[in-house]
Amino acid sequence: MTTPFVDTRRPFLVCYDSDSERRRRRLHQLVAQATAAGQRSAYECWLKPAARVALVEALRKEMAETDRLLVVALDARCPAENHGRAMHAQPDDVLVIA
Image 1 (cartoon, one colour):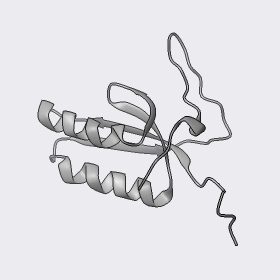
Image 2 (cartoon, one colour; image 1 turned 120 degrees about the horizontal axis):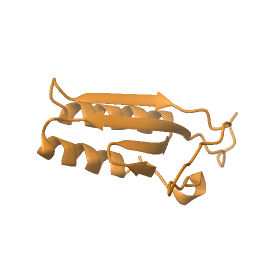
Image 3 (spheres, helix red, strand yellow; image 1 turned 180 degrees about the vertical axis):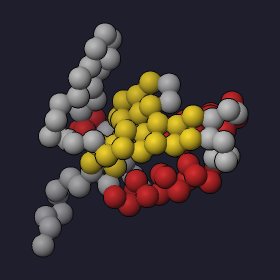
Image 4 (cartoon, rainbow, N blue to C red; image 1 turned 135 degrees about the vertical axis):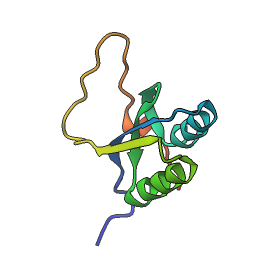
């Protein structure tokens, strides 16, 4: 039995590329809804399993055959390396509603 207050979100790196500016803006709008931190076309998203599936499905519907999408599960136990002006968002800063 799971406790109702356990956070089941996991960090994912979501990256996309499109040769269409219009599709790129639409993909950005979809990913931005789940973004904890990111830059250009690579975003850190804390997602529950169902939210990850829904996000990937929504992105794929917007993509053309020549567009690319990469979703990588990150290990939440390992700290991210931030260099330069990069800032790492804390999972408590983000609320994903799916």
